[in-house]
Image (cartoon, rainbow, N blue to C red):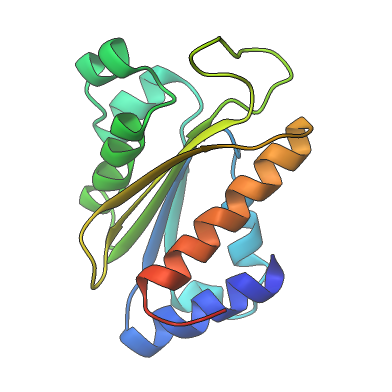
Length: 160
């Protein structure tokens, strides 16, 4: 994870970009991974931990209609989180993570391990991804952070 954050930092710095994160199920783990890298203050603008639906709406402008129609764990919500984070920050690139880490909270339609991510800004159009991760709560959260970092690196056009 640290190596991915280092690669991301180099890619953002080379382009003069700043990053903003919007995290729900990872509870700030992505921000922690990023700030473990010395010098990250040069490319990490800020991070939002928006665990409740109210915080998603109040801080990032996620629409109540989106939450009611698609749920907090959806690519639609992740996309609005990523867009909102860009709008209320001074960043150039954003990533948003929302999911069900478990062990409870899953449904038949959205089982435990369902994670939705969104990336916005930089050289590519907005992108979302939904997937399911098998494993423990920690494992789901860890893998979601890694996928977020890998997606940012891919978006910036550099290999890890």
